[in-house]
Length: 107
Image 1 (cartoon, rainbow, N blue to C red):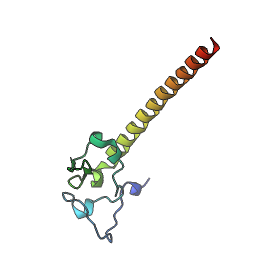
Image 2: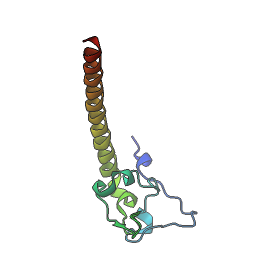
Image 3: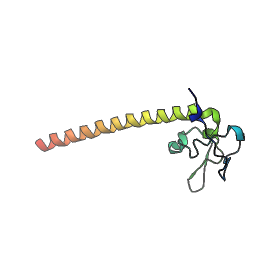
Image 4: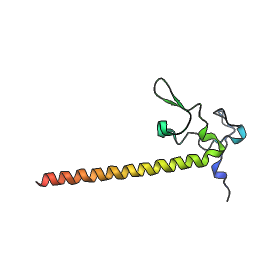
């Protein structure tokens, strides 16, 4: 099976390559906008924060390295698993609160 889905380049993009430190032939545009950005400090990339508190990823090439596809996908799967666990905990807490309220109003 082909693994072409793991790598994409858009050489006609006016920003290509948008980050330094990755050779043009290995620059992966698949994750043009980093899917790990939402993880903040836990993304695993090389970033700074501006004076206004905005995350600046200009120094990060992690999602753009050809060899990092599996790393990015594994991190996304981990984040989705944690989100699912968090939802389960929140649902259990909501169910308990609802049961407590029902018990209280029954008295």
